[in-house]
Length: 112
Length: 113
Image (cartoon, rainbow over all chains, first blue to last red):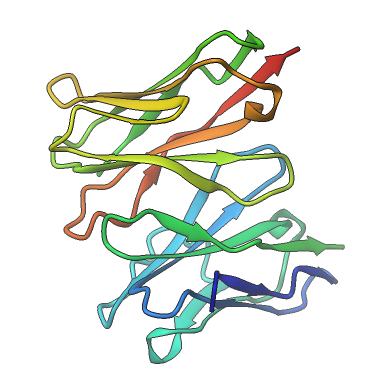
């Protein structure tokens, strides 16, 4: 596609429920990333996928968070047993070598 | 691992003046340095980048300089305009693909009319 597509754009969920966030990267981009951004804050790294290599999961804040990337394309970030502190904008990005990231428009997650 | 610091955290300038944001990095192997602009409520967007074999790069009113010896790089915006008001993030990459950046904490720039 022309850009990085994320869905849903907004998600309100009850505390304790599981959520799935989807990212469709730019076709041909070998790398895919998930970041989290709380209101007025910086970009918190979550996970990095590069081709067929094992993902760098070092930024995942707890074992309630997991992500997968199927067929080297679409990625899903899953948050189990959501907590209020999980409320944030979740940004996905994809890139080619030395070309910078293209970010999606994000999913705003609100846990009530 | 890499660590990126960014200063100042907030910056206010008068319209027409110049703005400079500075970043330092810790990993001497870092070889790619992009800058992102994030307007309120929008996604970060790449505005300029520089590779380690270049000392300076310009694009209209914005420029980036890199000092590999001192391990710092800076964003320069000249003739600032109100639409330059945003949060700016610097980043550094030390991996083999120029990817998997470490971002700085951001600088909130306000251009006052």
